[in-house]
Image (cartoon, rainbow, N blue to C red):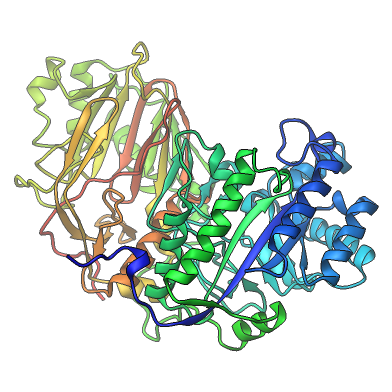
Length: 621
């Protein structure tokens, strides 16, 4: 039998650049014991020296990204001048929260980069850049953000301050608490995009993403990321760093993807004596370095001997092409820019919209006394805001049955007589009622699932969730909603054209739910874009997240790229509303909204959506 292990595979030789990088953090005596970084400046000097000794003149070009605080220490400055003289590369590094504590008393800039405005970033990058120029006498070329935090202002700010390279990208990383979302981002060297950091653009700024193993995803609470070559993985509970596998997969992906400017890059920090192999991180860094060299050998990679500026020149002269708008745009009506334009007048109920007009709280709806006027206003509010919270809802089973029937046709999976008897579907203290309209097929359909509650009958256009305030179910706390209409509107026109009239197919999946055991999500094939029959507006219509989903009729690589970008966008705060739920009623427009529970113990649950097979596309190119 043939041995297909990496060590036995034959590959043509190719030149691949090899980079190693260190983020040089301020010491904790400046930023607080809870912060990351070395214990003190002496420990920082030891870490930098031993890292340089173990990497110079060997397999990789070394980059050191300097925070503001170490540049205030003359011993650090002299050490980095030596490293620069011996062939190392220097850039800048910024944690605004650390700089805030060390320099501004915590009164300014106490946010991650991804949460700052253009003006705030402009001022901070200006301070950092001028300090570097004062200490070293030249313009820094490269930058990396702290926590790999990012927003679409930063690229323009870096260009303004003379930078040529940004090392802040790491595809697959999602950590919204730190303003870091790179889910589905382009994984190889490219020019930055001023409007969308997930895809290549045409700014004069070369983005160099961290090398990661995209075949593996690690989840740690709300954080998601792919493993890379850093030694920090030895500190993640339950994760045994497998550097030979990680580097072999990274190199295999380079072979398969064949990027124009191949390279690998790892990352570490200035908090470890890398000559002290009794420490876990020093051991891990040694294992990672050896595994990377072995992987280069296994896949026929030869280290490309090239200066960093020459590498940047090559990417700038031959960059990956950005997505191009189509000549004939797909036929859709963009959401009007003014939220007020979409806000109808309400006469009988009080409607308090959330930001961006997505979601609203309703007061004054009486479930015992409501009439046609109140019901019409509620329907208009649902059409305008798509998620309604009635926090003060007091409703009996009989009133609930009447209200659901007045709002629309109760789904075949919900028997009205059983509702009146109090036997309607319940799950951990939540009542689920499904309402249908002309949106979809009303006959039995086996290709249907909603979260772990299978209706099996019909794709609901509306869902009512009634949270009973006295229950102690596991899902109490926060519920998160995702605006799939806005995500569709924000896609590139070329991607909209790619999706027009297409189906997405999901494989059968067995999911282990802690609350109720294994759930079977049936195979599903559905239109990926739906048109609301009432408003004529389009929204993406996705099911469960799985790497095996595919957009039918598109090349596999393009399908994967679009889906990764879309799922990445569902993690961005601008597309989400996450209110605290303390009882009452939630009404959801399933045509343009995805919903997820946030569990205190387990972090974020996936956004999910009803899926249905064999339905004609409602969005035609």
